[in-house]
Amino acid sequence: MSKVYVIHENDAWVEPLRRAFAALGTPHEEWFLDRGLLDLRRPPPEGVFYNRMSASSHTRGHTYAPEYAAAVLEMLERHGRTVVNGRRALQLELSKVAQYEALAVHGIPTPETIAVIGLENIPDAAERLGYPLILKHNRAGKGLGVRLVLSAAGLADALAAIEASTDPHAHPRDGIWLVQRYIRAPEPFITRAEFIGGKFLYAVRVDTSEGFELCPADQCQVEPGAACPATAAPAEKFRVIEGFSHPLLPRMEAFLAANGIGIGAIEFITDEQGRTFAYDVNTNTNYNPDAERRAGVSGMGAAARYLTELLARQQQVAAAA
Image 1 (tube, rainbow, N blue to C red):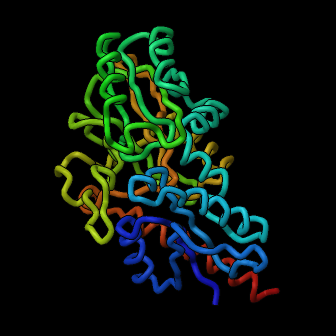
Image 2 (image 1 turned 90 degrees about the vertical axis):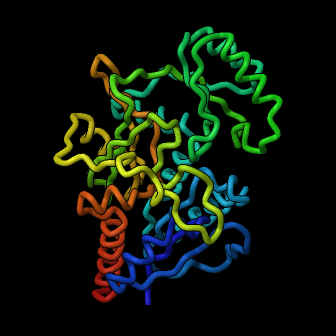
């Protein structure tokens, strides 16, 4: 019997999806991609494959999990399997440069950004861009490496701290730093739009007054077997916005469709002049349970229904054939 196969590297983040599948009675199996064998001589099983590989996998000791997932996705797509968030989605998950260039194709504004290789080149990029600015990793996750820099002196201090750091994650996984224009919002919040089946589901307002770690399940590292820390977030750090609409939503849906992202989120911020800038695309989206409980919605429930519908459709086609 065909199933839904969930490709991932973090058990804690999949637990809500397990519960949603159980409630629907959906046959499913997890492929935990960290280490193992990939026999290219054998075709993959029939089914629907949902890729939830994360850009922050290296922070959990799963250094090459994205590369492993990329190899698996190559095989799945070569054999014509149904894949939700395939090769292109994984590429975008792992590179903000790729995200910004793809968003621009669809007329979605992003903050002015300069990509830099080598810490010694960051001051030149900062001089070109001006202050204040954001220093961040191209491949990161969990707000890793994000610093607000207000001046040249502040940048010198930040770079000295990075060079002196013994934190193995102080430097970007791919070696690419981003120097980015700081977008000043009139209030300390960003908006995260969630999409299922490539269509807008809901938007959540995220309070940024506590810092840059904004993903609903990414306040801190999740150790194996630990509960999702999003459940301990402040009650109103995440709030689902009732009746949300935005003129960029149709462009965002077109962007997702063009890049094969069936389930994902786009984070954006609006400045003091009312201009909106998208700054992050998340193809491994998580949902805040407290915010959803208050609003009476379920992102994982919607994701599970979407994947179950894809599986049923596939089974119907197979039966007819």
